[in-house]
Amino acid sequence: RIMASLFGLRYENIERFLESYAKYIIRQGQSILAKNSATGRLSDSLDFTIFKTDEGYEIRFTAAAYGDFRDKGVSGNISKRYYYSIDGRRKSSPYRYVNKQPPVSRLVDWLSVKGIQGRYKKGDKKKRGGRFMKKESLAYLIARSIKSKGIKALSFYSQPISYSFGRFKTELSQNFAKDIEADIENKFSIKIW
Image 1 (tube, rainbow, N blue to C red):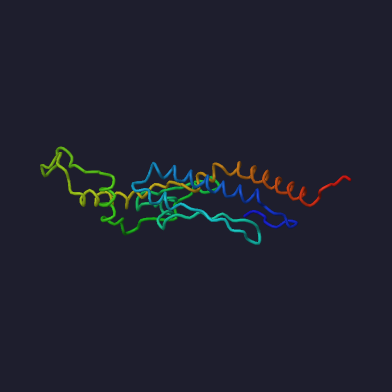
Image 2: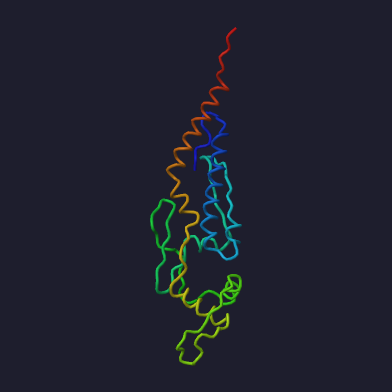
């Protein structure tokens, strides 16, 4: 939160800066997701809102409902997953698979979008080696693997914020100074006759 009311100043530079910073974070998040997404729906859902509060300004970043799972990851019932918080610290994922696994139907759709077709291993006990397997069978195996290993965190919001926070504070104070200078120029003009 950033202080919003000091001596009745107008904060045009700060508001412009906050908007450009939020757009930068969205672009960085979309760049991270572009490498790790099948459909791009999560990337398209990234958005922000800037609120003016009594204490200052607040930027809220939003995403699709499943965005938090992709941002912070999901621990499996065997492996633990970690993500990087906004302050750059490595933290354990708050989400975890216990008894259930991801729905096979969703993974079948994902396999179709990605164009992935599984094969049986050569030397298979049932003499199926090298043949294609049904998408449902492959989806079930992937779901079982996700249940035990979890889903890797992408930190698509927290990573860009963490990396750019030092620069954010510097540029915010520079824009605050510009607003003060502009307000002083508007309120105290010297006229010579």
